[in-house]
Image (spheres, rainbow, N blue to C red):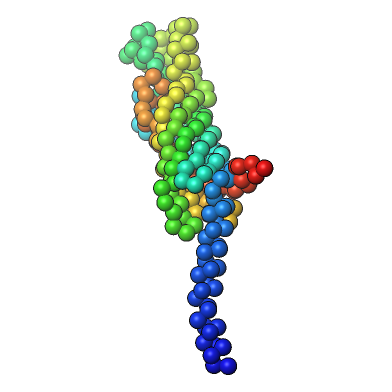
Length: 217
């Protein structure tokens, strides 16, 4: 009887190790080669030639396809704000025509790298391409109340959108199919865009694994 108990006690570490290994393998299967859909919210920095940088509330959705150490990332974000920007106009009193801008939508696509993970925690970083569009932009009278030239509307429309590279870094904590995450993205500045300062978005949200991204047949 004593020897049976000793053998049983000696087998406990083996079964614990086996259970941990099995759980780890199952967790990896629920990350690799998967489709994740997510929702997030946070804040985006908005800076214009006439206003200092400030934060705007942001909501969005993303789609992530994972492999083992990399993946594809696609997202849509909308920042809600009302700011005053400016555009070059020789007819304005100081050479800059005020432009009222409202909201901004950004569509991003890029590649992700997952360099390492520890248990449920997995950091990531990525690079890609982003298209940003100001929701509406309206030229305003300047301080001297000079009229807005009819030809200025084309320049304003051109300055409403821009495409650029973007960088992304974040981390997620995944338990079975559900993951919570936080991340930051960065778009460099552009004098040709109504939002001229660098654009940084910090968001947090939740993703869910809806299944394998590889055809099993």
